Length: 233
Image (cartoon, rainbow, N blue to C red; front, top):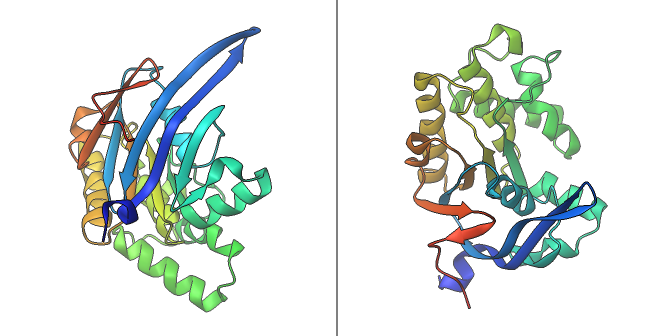
């Protein structure tokens, strides 16, 4: 496979800013970056460096002010809001710091949620949810509600929910930021397994140097610019 064919995320001269109090505040400037299919990349940088903004742009949560952002050959900056919502549902799995589980749903039902938007039958959904929860080590916790689970277990449910649709990319925003050391290590081990054994492309933002060691490549941002990352043509 050629290098170009192996590029999953292609970013060229990306810029993003916000308006606060009537004043323009640049967040990202002239970002150029390639992410390969099957890569585990970590975005690091001080608070306010733009790493979460870049993650949100790649995930199609937000749109850049200028520049190109292609995922699997499709320039997602050109999609309408409706098209972008459909694209996210098909291509992106989200893992957040605070789990974002529905408290009135048990683990099985939380993981099943994104599958309700697909054409899978009830039996197919059940099989996929059970397999996914088993993968993250929670096959015996399917009927437990979030308040009956530890923080680490809740995050593993969140990972199961993120991967149950078999997304193209997993985006992780501080996935271990609210966990104790052992739970964090368990989550990182699952992410490494998803990347190493299943070939999942993972893009993670973290402040934690230990968590960053799980990734295969580190990209540093500072004041909205990439530091030390090779620029593409």
